[in-house]
Image (spheres, rainbow, N blue to C red):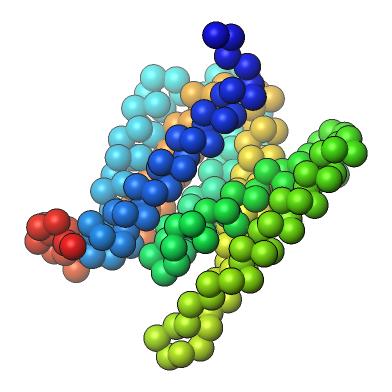
Length: 215
């Protein structure tokens, strides 16, 4: 079987579906809090980042601005991931993921305006269909906060989608001089540092060490 980019994209979507279901399971049933989940995940990403930096480094002659864009892309993606994980703590995964993963629509629009790429009629129709579906899903299932006031979580989900798109577009730009593995370790390092800094609390460490299946 010849592997095409379409097959690879479908396989990637299937893998991400499994990952998101596991994320939802862990943050809602296996860990006592989001920070308790972020700490070990951040530590693992730090290991990946440091290992990748030692193995691949940054190619000679790469502009500093390209590295800065790669760091920016990684930081934006990290914020999007945190919003996604926080949303999974409060809403069903079946309502979170379809909205967040409309980001290819935003990627297409950004590529059209900023990278000079062109979209055909069928692609514009696809953008409209995806946007309509996301709005339909987001308009249902709003859950109230503890005070009884609805939180605008759907807006946060759309924000996460836009941030994922920005991360993809800026990441593509940085790949003009960086290789995949350079972008990978930069992303892992930025995400790992952010997760650890956000989650490293004495109470979080105590909660993790006292875990026994949680639920």
